[in-house]
Image 1 (cartoon, rainbow over the protein chains, first blue to last red):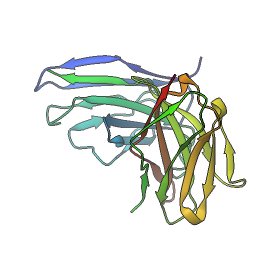
Image 2 (cartoon, rainbow over the protein chains, first blue to last red; image 1 turned 90 degrees about the vertical axis):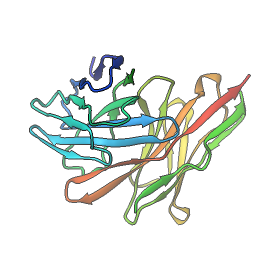
Image 3 (cartoon, rainbow over the protein chains, first blue to last red; image 1 turned 180 degrees about the vertical axis):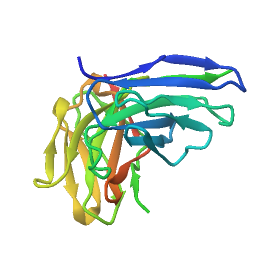
Image 4 (tube, chains in turn green, yellow; image 1 turned 30 degrees about the vertical axis):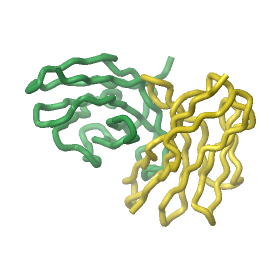
Length: 116
Length: 116
């Protein structure tokens, strides 16, 4: 079955700790994305990557870091510099890196991060 | 600046009644438009998309949307709502920043409740 997996589903972090959220896709998609979702705020783009070993900041990249060492994987690290990290995090992918932002994005099931 | 507005934060309809969710966008070029649905605690699922051609687009689960360029709108409709349609609905526009760079801009969502 092709799709996007995110793990863990729930994650708890103490203040001051870094945590890494996993995102894997077996759709052979070029581009991958990370979004943050807060109630009533819609989706806000954190980072995106159109090709291996390259990624771009989105609207709210401060306090986050990513890597793209393999086409199928795009992990997100929430660092201690992120002041309000409690949120629902969604990973997505899209087939064509040359589409200029107009391609359909397919979403994973999400990770809910709670800072204790 | 590019933006998507969903004027209704929360809508309640009776089961069997018709539904229309509003979406207005601001984008200078030809828009690529999407509607996604999200069940609680889940990822987003694509309902339908408009790229070009016929302005009335059919999607999954009996949904349709109509693109009206003169009104900068892309409203989602369903003739008869089922209790399982209760979810949050997001409208998005694909924005090109130049060349292969671009992304989806999401509205803040409309939560749909269905009365028995």
